[in-house]
Length: 203
Image 1 (cartoon, rainbow, N blue to C red):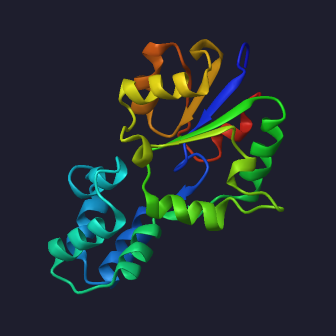
Image 2 (cartoon, rainbow, N blue to C red):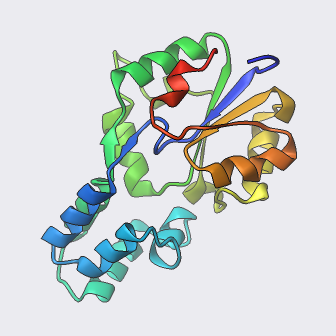
């Protein structure tokens, strides 16, 4: 793409696969159907929003799941069920990232939480001797920034910290709303409707 020097990648739905039903089934198996309802209906307020912007810790999250469901399940079981949402990153996508890093400055910007991110670091970005830091120049995570997409503030902070120009930046996200949130700043956007669509871009 003309004039692009920087690419910002979303995580879920762009790099990592998502399987909401697998997560629902996992919480159901623990008897936590009330939490399954949150996942099924994509509810982001309260529990999931607070963990995503770093307002609560993983321990607080697990306590809240137990409170909501009335189930005496362990932190480990809850983290396992929540992590079933992510299905991994294909070698094809990881190879593409490594190739692109030779041509562009690459960044990751994700609305995520400590549980999902640790899974990605430990299991998904370990490829041919590489670790997550080998794939990106900088990594921006909502739970560490206390901001989330599509707020204008998070995009402004990424541009500032990365010291990049919006007109030279392509943002790839599976949410049209997130793309639209970045557009007023002059960031070029690509809506990744299906997880592997971005692989066909002329980059």
